[in-house]
Image (cartoon, rainbow, N blue to C red; front, side):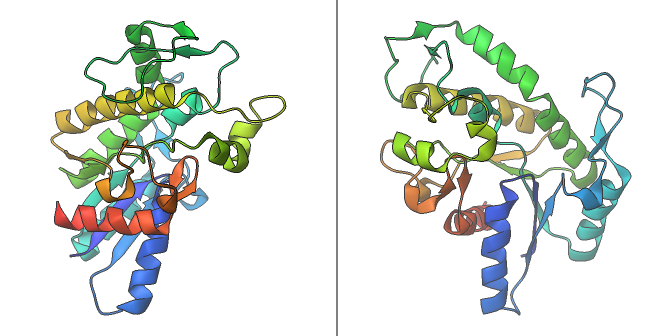
Length: 248
């Protein structure tokens, strides 16, 4: 079947895998991607009022591009929308280190040497920061109807990898060496983000797909063989995403 995958930076892994597959098997169905913040589709959003995304929808060029792909190829539509807010908040160790308790979380233990903050506060902050991603999901639903959304890649555990490979946007936020936040905080921020995104997708009648288990270690963190950098999957990860969407 043809696929259309819509998102932002996480489409890169899918695009690379799709290109390799297309070159090897040119007669098979295609996976196409749309990166919503590429300049060709600007503006990504219209009807954003004073930073409030409640009435936001995609701009005309982006709406037309998605609609055209659906009309011409009748693809299964999938989203890898967002997926980096949790990294913005928790990849790098905060000047005032913190952690929070997430009920039913089987991830790493709490860091007892840092400040424990209420989960409700973290949830409120995350919900506000995810507003553009919720708007993207709504806008995609308006065009495509029910769609699949794939959970963002889980965090990597290895702090040395983060320090060595963190993107410029994260390096510029601090002074001196990059110091990763504790694995427990990074895990819980990712899990809570996933919970909020799942709830939003399912309210829209969409289908939520968990990150591919084959890309994860036994502890649930991303295996470095599937990591392009501390926040994104690589081409091998993109191939797993394509297979997961096809098999859903």
